[in-house]
Length: 388
Image (cartoon, rainbow, N blue to C red):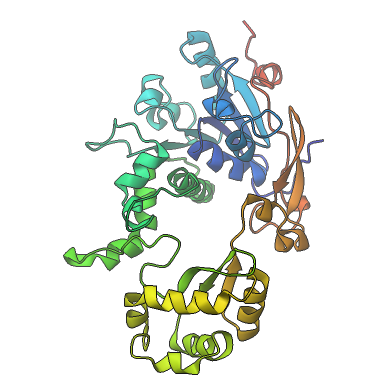
């Protein structure tokens, strides 16, 4: 059963999205969560190609279920003049259009902000692409891994022996969130001026912003942070440490000299380590991390992960479990804060998470993940579009 509330922040806002893959769908799902009506334009029959990434969620793709709840699916062939005209008729009444088609495709279809504002001055058009609407990289294909590489993410992620991408589509997510926040700002601006505007979101620029710390660290030709696996490149001890009793690991982070002294005295039970000439400050500890890691893991070898975490908690040293995905599904903090909700899909009900910042389900729009073209008939009738 769909749960729709008329008091949500974006109630009454209609978003039409020519979206595929992750960045644009992730953006528009955030808008849908806040009550916007999101009409997802897909190819007839096959739909968004992200529907076919895998079959892990009752036969549906994990990426698609994650990013596409609470939307209406409108199946259109935009190469068909009649279908394209139907879309333009809908856009005449829309508040926002989001698109992440191939570079230049929206313009060739007559769907640029410049064209759409002629009949709909208030429309906000958000274009999401790999490298932006102009510049020498404009037409390059931009998959998430490729943008991570261009933005320097692989230079700081991985081990000394080999770079590694992040385990999630971080460039897509970054672009989607900047698209989302810029659309919210544009809606506020339109409330003052009555006019929409164009938003040009680049995956590269989104990632470059997130890479600003390592960029400044390498300021003026200095070497950048080294790849340090799951450890911190410049702070130590900070990262995973193996325990012995169960073969597991815990994450631990020490950020200042006070915490280092407490760790030595109360957890490692060797206060002399605090002033040891190899470990007397963070720079020395980071330089001599291999020796220090052996000392720590020797102490932890007699403990299970739970016992090590208990000692760290008692001492007030920051730590975390090394959870796998099943550990996150069952995370006691998520359960204690009632973060789980139910989401309908064409293959049955699946669990979902409340958006961050939302306290309960009365503050969010949670509706089903649509089948391809599920809402064609209703949308055509509403906007006066002939089925033919």
